[in-house]
Image (cartoon, rainbow, N blue to C red; front, side, top):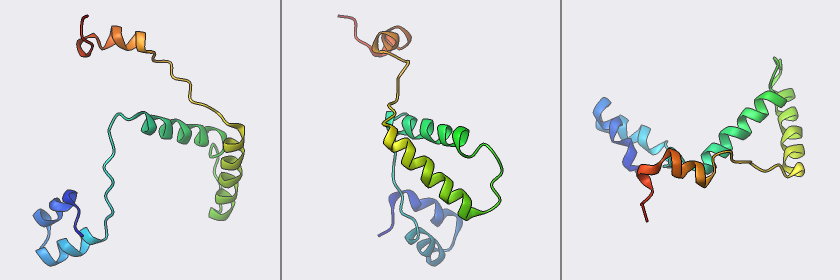
Length: 100
């Protein structure tokens, strides 16, 4: 099945090639400002700082180290601590909150 977001292929390529390329894609639409996306970015930043902060010469070594880091991170049950509270949102985003 061709995804709706693959229409740009038909603007750039002949229909047969566009269809071939579009069928190779598995497009997942995600919100730009979803909290889960922020959490993923935070985790990738922590990974970079704690595990990938140096040159690692072999892919196998990197995969092993990332797997160890991932296991340790999951076992430590770290939680995301949001600094932006509802009260802060009501001040900063007051145009979005109704006046009661």
